Amino acid sequence: MKNTNSELNHREFKERKIVLESYPRFLFIEFTRRCNLYCEMCRPQKDSCLNQFISDELLHKIETEVIPHAQCLDLRGWGESTLDDRLLPFMQKYAHDKTVFLFTNMNSRDSQYWSEVSKLPVHIILSIESTIPERYSLFRRGGNFAKI
Image (tube, rainbow, N blue to C red; front, side, top):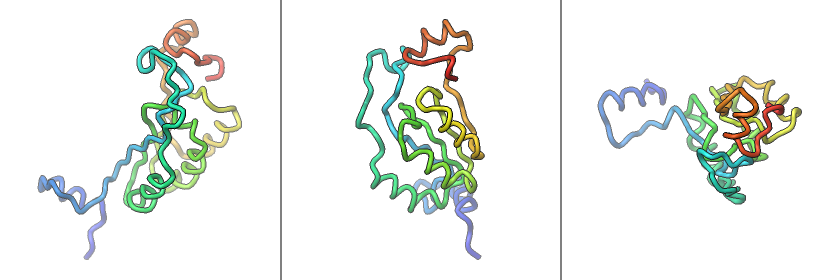
């Protein structure tokens, strides 16, 4: 009888194995380091990281070799993942079979984009430091509280 990846993963963990045959069950995928804001806590200077997106080759490798075994896809990173045009089709492809978490500042796309995201079974985690507009603008430089 063949073990599932999850069962193998649990067994290897219990056995304290260092070299694993199982694949990760939870993936953290950073689509970009680019951000549309320059917040005091992570980007005191306006450093847009314009070309720092995950390569098509690496994303393809992750999709073909690792995602089939994963249960959860955590889409976050140093940047704002929704700036990557590949993100929405990616979520549409996997959200019905995997647990998907999207961390976002919700300031990068229009309402049509968010309407499409809302049709998916995706957990959206909003990165926000204050619900008071004046304080929000202090923390999220370049952000638009009204847009959220």
